[in-house]
Picture 1: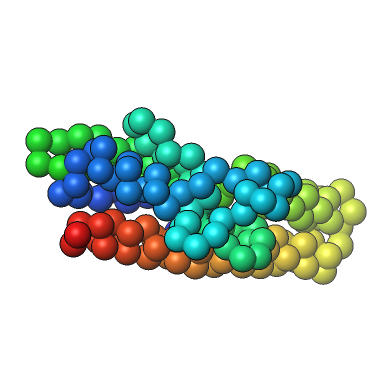
Picture 2: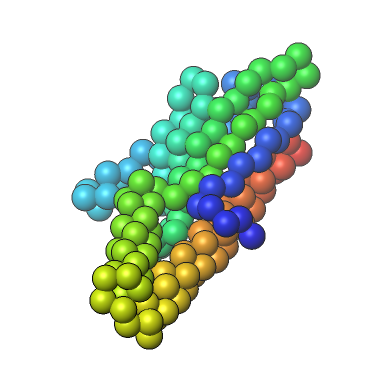
Length: 161
């Protein structure tokens, strides 16, 4: 389990760069969450954008998930296929709130430790900050595993065709 909301991997594919991006583009749709008509249907596995050099996607989900990873990828051509560099990270909004509550709780820990000595409250705030962070990392790593599984299944399925 990672201690930071970040993970990465490198995949080697027998498919060319154009084939990888083409297969990914077929199962990815750009979505406007304020317009219900753009919601993914059927064979769409990812929301996001696929460009000429890489992609910025996330797994399609039926309900909101704060810890769903943003998948940033770059595809480079090689003589025998392609190399796919993938980074998994929290969306900026989720990262902001994780950092915000961690800082607030740690600030209360310092406040109750040094300014108004109340070690019970200081300990409680510190434990809450740890629990908050541990739960966030657990759910983030669980979603990375699920997203990775969908991505690998897509690449492996396409390679068998």
